[in-house]
Image 1: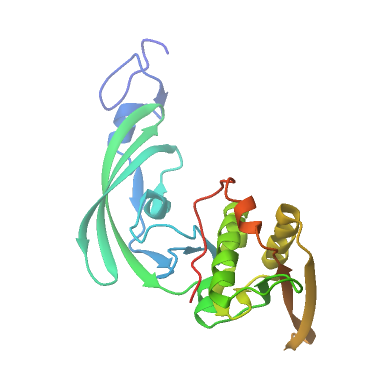
Image 2: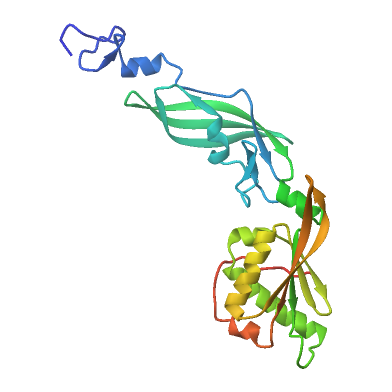
Length: 262
């Protein structure tokens, strides 16, 4: 920069200029970031998932709004890079919350801290997974049974043994497979575990076969028609011999376990 070039606002000659104005002065005269007049967060009241762009994401999230929910409502100037956003909750009502955002940003290489208000409307709506579960919808059943031959077990002892097997099995299952488990039912002959996704039920059945060496019997029954195609419900029958629960007691996995309904 030549000595004749200076900021027309502050007179500085040692700073890069854009249209005759240095970056610090330009940041003082520019709206660096705004927020939508009102943001909307659609949240599942059961699992905490958010509806984002027509998709449900972040199942298992907190019901409290965090930066991941709020920062997308900011609309920065094209030359602004947001480095950090911290949100302070000011007012809470039944379906509306007001926040003060503390935004750390950079404009043309100059760091700035900006405060900005944001009002967010919260909408409670059940996600498809929770809707199906609450409606007792299912596409597949995993049946937990004892062996077909051999000495019969008393129902309480059989169910307790199979519950231990199931708990250990779910520790090794992927989170999305466990998520597809809707509910379980106790029967004299064991347990029926209902799934909203057939692929998840089939994957857990295969895992049981690999882990315990048990046979898997798969059958399907016609449930109805959808979009002109036949829809089937699939049943996977797993027969666990005595001692299967103890053979898995030393294995560890994820923290999620099944709660069996007596």
